[in-house]
Length: 124
Image 1 (cartoon, rainbow, N blue to C red):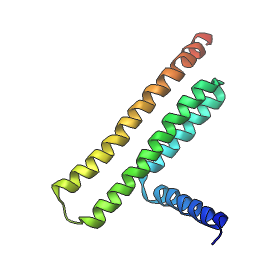
Image 2: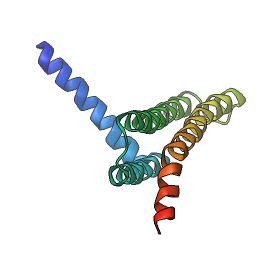
Image 3: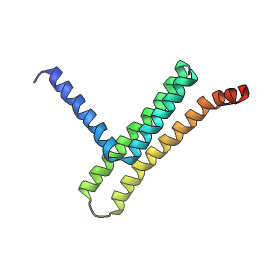
């Protein structure tokens, strides 16, 4: 198999993973919806390049961690279908990582958009 076909196949697997997460994980769907809304707000707010970089970093960090969380949950469920304290720890810690990333994203979004909202309200 050529290097191109191998790379193309890898991208196919990656996109299948994103599609699977979107279809099966309500939290991933919620994160995507919020990302679309925030990006739309950014387009209409005229963000600076540095604001865009921070905002996109925050969005993608949450999405990446949600994908890792989904993977960890699937592996734990496969290895330990019964309730087990160590399985619970793995799932809880993975979920905590997503929560912390989401809190970070909210803070970054608040810092970026608060000034813009204040200016908008002052103009009314």
